[in-house]
Length: 357
Ligand SMILES: NC(=O)c1ccc[n+]([C@@H]2O[C@H](COP(=O)([O-])OP(=O)(O)OC[C@H]3O[C@@H](n4cnc5c(N)ncnc54)[C@H](OP(=O)(O)O)[C@@H]3O)[C@@H](O)[C@H]2O)c1
Image 1 (cartoon, rainbow, N blue to C red):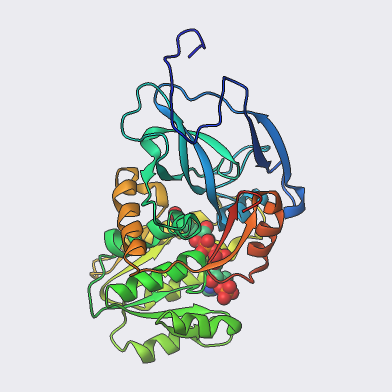
Image 2: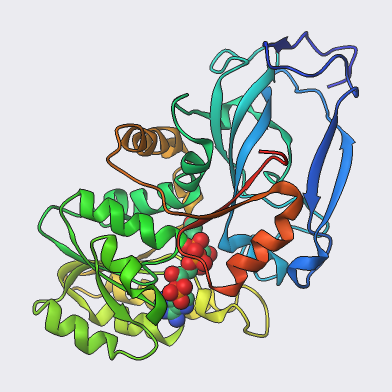
């Protein structure tokens, strides 16, 4: 749409814009493959929202494993370099296009962006925004956007867990894993979860039975703890261990595969690790033995995003769910934040906040 045909936008009390191009955006750029120190910061004019878009001043943006993969060129939906990373955000609407009625300037919102959130302002389709209760801390709220919706949908829309069941969570200390564990415990589901040796206590505190994935004989320990097999397994590791995950299932159980973290440093095409996974999942799914196997990705049900993230915000607001925040970094230190996540020394979520907060 040209400037001549654009309708007027609506601004609220928090809007900083005084005219098109008058405001600059500060954003982080991933220019090429490499280590986190390749990230750069740039400024550019903020573009005006089109009629169905909104401008959001970012209050918190998540740092996720997807960016670790993108930096190695190994994310399944790899964006072309250079690009602005950032999978999810929480912020305040400062301006909306003329046709936007669902969201108002001044409102706090969340969005799943896949890329682009590591910025102080973003322009997004208003239909992608979900309202966030004002009383929530933006840092806690952003921790349940991608990771929370992933965990919620895998538990309640895919595996359809019920009170009294037992599930197995690989990486129960991670961003998704901590939320899978907390949400399962909230639903009165027993959790057996793996973590490295130094994170065993953190996993126990979440209410799970911790196992150490490097030294324990995990399948044998799970057989001892769940004699009839578990009701669901959540596997983000992939690789040959996926067969162990399948074998842990009891009758009627569901294997949910949702990542290939174990092949992060593999050579060859980035989609290659998915081929044997998808083939095995399909084969297992077709076996007439009452068990199910499926691959989950967070964009599988865009129509449920608003509904599911709203449930998670409600749980946070009522104090029934906590988000585990490992550390928050100012936007200008995004490379340190990504380096920390990549180091494996993280328990929970790493978050970027505007400089000076
Ligand atoms: N499909 C989707 O839509 C979707 C959405 C979100 C995330 N994901 C995927 O989910 C995965 C986790 O993301 P995240 O943000 O939670 O990452 P994260 O915070 O870095 O957590 C990774 C977790 O994996 C554990 N881990 C590492 N190697 C392991 C192994 N060999 N066996 C078992 N656990 C292992 C780590 O445990 P220690 O730190 O204790 O070693 C840590 O708890 C990534 O692969 C990501 O791509 C997928």
